[in-house]
Length: 272
Ligand code: A3P
Image (cartoon, rainbow, N blue to C red; front, side, top):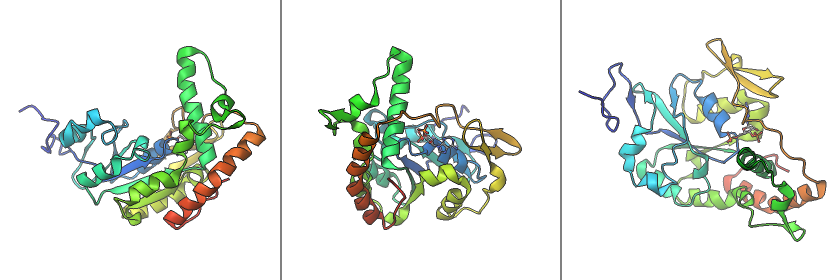
């Protein structure tokens, strides 16, 4: 019989597709690729390769859970499946939809200094545009309008973490959402990953030999079964230099929202 991708029937080698037990919900440019790659170092975890956009894109959501399941990687029974779609965090309809699938799903949210995240967001969008149009709109023209911060610039809204977090907390208790410090993950991936293992009740497996600092890349890279690999070149780009007075405006803009976020989650981060 031909294998039907939309069922739980096992593949001849004993693997099957399973709905995710773990979802990395964001934030965009927080370090979501690094997190899912590092989590896959664990033998009990299998990760979806692509961003599935099931819960945020209506055209996908309407296809139902069978379609979602068909997007999942093959795994052994007992292994945990993880997918990451960074756009979930800032999409207001997503928390309710995920809860409807599985209220016990474990959520990972990786966050980074909000200003740094904006610069990273800009760099990503305009790198893509640069390839197509060979023109790079300077960041100042997006950040500023008449000398003041342009609050219509979408990247600013995505860094208002408390706004989006409030929406998640209407549907999930804080204990189900593990916050990963994206700045710490860059500096010291092992200690952040140990906390993730603990939150997921995984046997501690990820260890110091899984990471080595690559001077050329300027980031930690991964070592697994003796094989070494770094993330793609699109991860760890140089950000545009922004004039100090504009940076101050950004720090000022995020200062209150950051404090609200710290209150909401009962912990602080070392953000500007
Ligand atoms: P930059 O490219 O702006 O530096 P995402 O995968 O969510 O798009 O996040 C990308 C960010 O992951 C990168 O942003 C980079 O700072 C961060 N990152 C964290 N750990 C990394 C690693 N080991 N290698 C490369 N980038 C890493």
